[in-house]
Image (cartoon, rainbow, N blue to C red; front, side):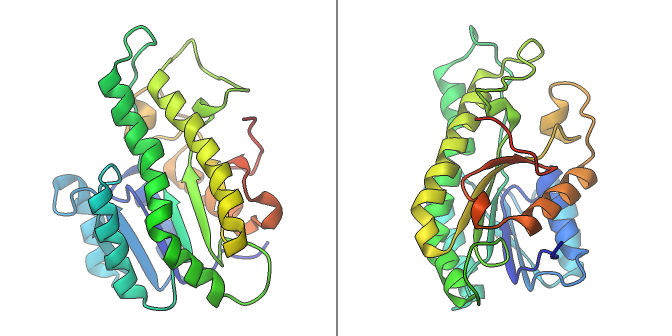
Length: 258
């Protein structure tokens, strides 16, 4: 299997959990990206300390202040990333930032539904729009035909919680707002795959597994470590091609029902 090879990658929610794990694994690649943009809500905060330590040792990590629920922050981040990349463009956008509210259906509120939907669904929509020019540049500057993550791609980190066909773990956790936001994110991924294919950009929804992160641990004892999840996801990303755009896959490469 071909090794994932990207010149530039942007990961949202990169200060902890899966986001931080992705940054760490990109650094360990035989040929690490020249640019690793780590999006983070509060780069100077306590929760970003580990990311700051990494960046101090690796000049290819650029920490970008980024709140995916704020359109102004997204536009500023796109401008800053563009300054670093120039005409080379952005190869890989990983929309990883997400939030979870564990409300039951009866306890769901307008405020919680709006907050979760804004971060988990509208954020990736606006990120795709803002970074589209940079993704297009990367696709245009890559040799060969077809689609791949090494060329230009949007990866939306989704969840089996958004699968209407599977609807797993309902008895353990309802989390209605989270499920709805991820189901909508899956549709967004499909829409992006159709709209951006002509620009040479691959788009998929990717379930990372039930992972040992703050978010995953909020609903029990997850069986999957961050390292295993990230290794699996990067292996999947390295294998994606034109036939996979618009699909919903898990960290082991299995297709998940919509």
